[in-house]
Image (cartoon, rainbow over all chains, first blue to last red; front, top):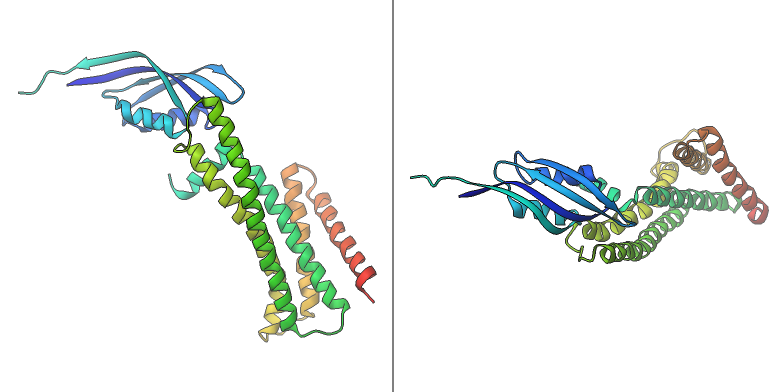
Amino acid sequence: MVLVKRLVLDVLKPHQPNVLEFSQTIAKAGGNYRVCITVLEVDENTETLQVVVEGNAIDFDAVQTGISDLGGSLHSIDEVEVQGEPQAG
Amino acid sequence: MNLLQQTRFLLRITRTHDIMRRYFVVNGFDGALTMLGLILGFLVSSATALSVIINVCLAAAIALGMSGVSSAYVSEVAERKRALGELEDAMITDLHDSAHGEAARGVPVLIALVNGFAPLAISLLILIPLIAANAGLALPVSPLYAAVAIALLLIFLLGVFLGSIAGVSWLRSGVQTLLVAILTAALIYLFAGY
């Protein structure tokens, strides 16, 4: 089994909800996620973010759903860190 | 997220708190002044049965409520659709299933309900003395004058509310709206009082 430990995402989102609410929603997608967001660019209606998600086993689909539920759009996955776990038995 | 939190969230992301507040005050004021006008109209006219006065005022209150709901809904649906379209253009994505899409559908309903509820609720408060007297409750003053007093009080309170929003003197703001009501009453007595 391969566990996703860290993701760096490029995300475009509307100004509302703000970055704090956005990060909290992503963090809620998993039990122990640590989320760090950097605003890279601000336009008239949108913001470009670098979203770093760290956790023991990140559920990428849940993170992506959290982003799209708040009106965000995932542009690219810029970095990934995964860890293989030995099969039991 | 419970319903209240969800509602607050949708109002926040669409930044419609202030629109809803404005609708509440504007239409609430409409309701209060309309009831004041109707009751003063009955006061300057020949004696009319209380049940007739209640029916007329109640019908006007319901019409104000329906007008508030329908007009706000139609205009807010158009506004929210336009705002969502602009956001979708900027995002180059379909936001129908996002919180913004949900807000574009739900916020107009909420604003319409507030816009309809405000004049209806304020009108019903003003009608309490009439309804109470009609039900046989003995009032220390004439029910029509009591209703006028409640209308003036509510108009003053709407002014106080506006003053607290604007961060100016609540007394001054309350007196300003009260003066509008007094001017309305004077015009009614001037043109209808013969």
